[in-house]
Length: 210
Image (cartoon, rainbow, N blue to C red):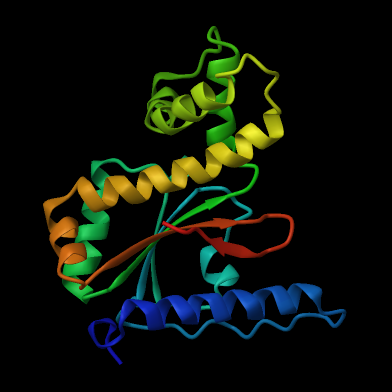
């Protein structure tokens, strides 16, 4: 079945079921036997995943999907920039893929680096890393303003956890409103864009409410 024949909610349900299988395998006391991947000549991805580059987040594994089923774009902090938007536009138009998932994860180093710049303004990063931090900054800065509004102490672990989810939601919004092509696909119901967070401690993917 081609991606264009699969509605976004069906694909989303398949990813959730795949993650449940992945978690069940993690919990099993038996050695996990992973079948060799079946090589495919042509890709027909049913979902597009914009995820983080973190080595602990192997996208096909955590959704238990074979090769050719997911069009994966990975960048530190799962940030949205022109190259990521263009990649998503390409997959959505060429393959008719109807679901985009922005996948953040717990203990994200890129988000933590951005938080560090608010706590320690003199923190220095290379210009290239700083460009990633700058794309995360708006969601983290707004959250920081809310948490410090009453001049109370900020729980840094909670701050980072909330910042990770805020960053995912910002990326979802940028995809929905930063591309005429994607905006039109979302508007006519052809494309669904959702956010999610992967827990590196449990293997669970939690899909965020809009």
